[in-house]
Image (cartoon, rainbow, N blue to C red; front, side, top):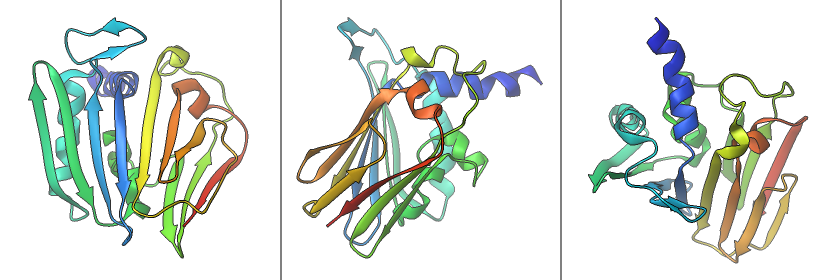
Amino acid sequence: MKKYIYLPLILILNSCFCTYDITINNDGSAHIEINDWESHDGEQYEQSVGGEDFYSEYDAFKNSEVVSNYERIEENGFYKVTYDINNVDSLENYLFPLNSMESGTAPTSFKYENEQFIITHVFEEDGPNDATMYGEFIPLRVIFRFKKDIVSFSSELDFVKQINKRELEINTDLNTISYGKGTKKVIVSF
């Protein structure tokens, strides 16, 4: 029984030492690449921080009707996972393996329609728990790439930035993205 209690904790703590690179296509589909970090803040890693335990959890996606072109590669102790989803509106269920197990429980949702991409994030108001008490030391990096130029960008989240005419970046830590007040939106218009 304890294995099931601690597995989510292990996955959450290890899941943020990688870059989530998401390309949103004009038809609302998306290509996702998850690249293991080989270094962080000047520290070189000898092997994946998440390891086989974390990355093998993504294998659950390959049988989904929403996912295609799934591939998980290990090279020199580091991992890369790539796949496509047919609708970015379901991205919250196919970004972290735990979210797919508990569909509808993700604090972040995505919507692409009428020449807009909208991220909605609901903060949990309670403070850190056993899983996130060291969240300030757990980095999170997500890049969103678009096929069209961004015409306007607005964000109620300080950690979401437009980095050029076709990209957004989330560069933060687990605590910052986990705790706050209310529901916040990021709106990108094309």
